[in-house]
Image (cartoon, rainbow over all chains, first blue to last red; front, side, top):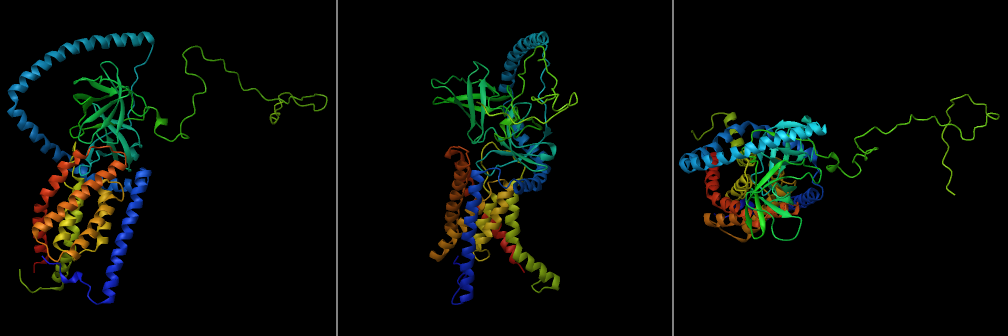
Length: 338
Length: 171
């Protein structure tokens, strides 16, 4: 198809200038876009209001269709379950036997744990939750792995808070609108979660690979300490994620790198829980951090607190001033050290 | 349908359809990013960009390059890309298309597909590189399936856009 003649401006000077102006606007717009992109890279929280507003406006549309897509994604599972029923049945029986044995051991350990806690006088710590909400969409068009939640700053959600489901860690909040927020999933390439393996307590960083798997970067040099089947939980290092939340299970070792798969599948979970940052100071700047505790949190007899004493004039001379008893005077400037 | 418009309202309706079907269909494609799909890996093509370049290759005269700027901004806000990503890539694609059109006197369907494939590859790689700059350290192989699928989707998009175009201009 030849380009239509209307693109050709011919000899009309007005039309030619108009076309030139169009190109100037386009190139200027590209420069502005480059600037916006630079701002987005340097300061990811820039334009938070604009992006949050767009999030608010678009999230309800996603939320409406979520149940429909859940139905369709369930069809594939149903069909494959039908065809693999026999082998699946045998495998599940085997797993059930193993799980029963493990359950007994776990119950014993739980009972012992409760007894020891009671002995120590510790209350069972309940991690509080900020909001229970749903995942309504994701950035399935780009190489980033972000999900949209149907609750935002109005529900108390702030940037940096961890998000989990009953199965395990989902990610952490990246940006918020008023009624919707965006979550950086643990599978995203920019997400790194400090974890430890349940077997052997090996610390590592779980870094997403963008294709639904997680790479485990150990902190120590040497042979890979992980085996297929190892379960990883958050270690609580870094202060964002609370400790002991299940994150992933190692599926294979690829040339000395352990590849794990997240335990919580954001496509399947119905509800997720947004929790407060484990140590809130970890998400803010350095100056917004809370000051250290005045007294060390030791359990024991409380330190003897002296009532605030009234400051008296050190140069008190009754003969000169004749002050009333208990008179308060302004503290003096400290004398220069000699 | 009769060839002669019966009333002023019908003329206005036809005019609206002729003017705005390309824009509205592209916006609808951009809004497909809101589908409630949660994917573990990128697979589906960027529908907005696909619709945009299909319209541009079929009807070079309807849009100037700055149109891509506004639509790119809408796509960035809807899909949650870093602000400026689609604005930059889409406008650059339009400028390159103008350059190609000025050099190439004639192109057919296969040339269109080739040009679209180049644009889709550059667009996906550009988005991947911007994500890399933003700290998302993802292997290049992760985006290959998405690239292949979007190139294979072009013929379907071209059919759809062609049908819309015929309906738009029908009397």
